[in-house]
Each structure stands twice: as structure tokens, then as C-alpha cells.
Image 1 (cartoon, rainbow, N blue to C red):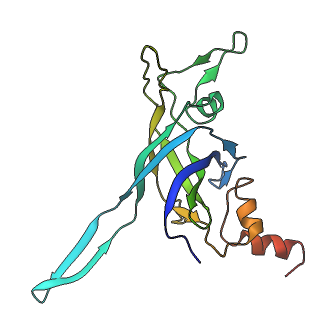
Image 2 (image 1 turned 60 degrees about the horizontal axis):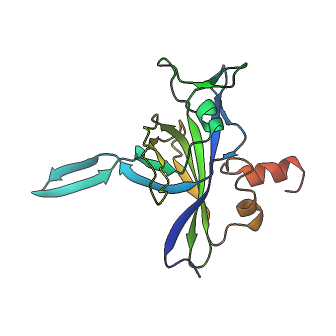
Image 3 (image 1 turned 60 degrees about the vertical axis):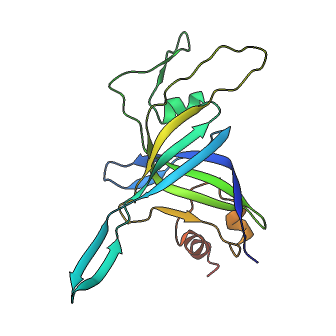
Length: 197
């Protein structure tokens, strides 16, 4: 039986994208981005309508990915260095942000709960904006401030934009979701290499 509802966000991980000299794309090691608060994604694309015979004869929507926001309790220093491009001074261990630095692309792994079973998801090619900064004085109560980044997820060169587990996803795939970025056919290729198939 599948989920009737979904709720919650947890286990957010980012995975740096590595582009080889020949243009091939691979993924680094997933790292946890603790303190996920919210992820909002709006679909991107254009509607195409063609009129003939005095009616809309053909209609379709293009898929150019998603845009939204990723809100976390506090952006980790690792994320700032790995993705936002901040540099750490080797002597004083101070993080520095340079105007000439561009954010690097990454894959985003995350999990959304359901009433039956959680689904684990991946966005294959993401970029984010630099976060703003909010700080307010704390009075009798301390209200945590969060960091929010604008996020864009676009299709890869092969058109793959995102993937998610289902209720019939094998346990081995579900349990290994945060070890590496899931790729179509990866299980078959691994089994063939080991001579299982």
C-alpha cells in the first residue's frame, strides 16, 4: 500500500559534481547538510499550444527543471567551501568569500516522510545562490535564525532531472541512498561486473 500523505524533510545531503577534462560528469562523496528546515520547488518550463480546426489542436509543457528555496538551520563550513567556494585561511582558519567566486554545481539527496514509508529523492544538477544573513537580538526567548538559499535544479545533459524511491524499491537501494548518487541501471551494471547476471 502506497503513501496517502507526505510530510517532513530530513537527511539532506549534497554531492559535488566533478567534471572531467573530457566533459564527463561524475559525483563526489555525499555529505550531510544537517538542520534542514524546508525545501520548496516550483516547476520550470513553457506551455506550447498549437491551434488548428478552431481549437487547441496540440498542447504540451517543456521540462526545464525546478526553482525554489532551500532553508537550513545553519549552513555548514564544509558546504560553504565545497559548493559556495569560500576559502579557508590555512593559518588563522577564517573563511573568506571572494566576489569572483562562483558556486559549484551539486546533486541534492533528501528524504520526505509518508504515512507508510519515506521516499528518498535526488536532484541531479543543482546550483544555489549565496545566502543572505539575518541576525536579531535575543531577549527573554531565543528564536533561531535560519539560512535560505535560492536553488535551481536543471536537467543533466542526458535529460535526467530527478529520481525518487517507491514502495517497491529494493531495500539495498533504499538503504544505500546516501552512499552515492543513484544512477539508472547501476544495479544491473554492478551485478554484471560481479558475474551475477
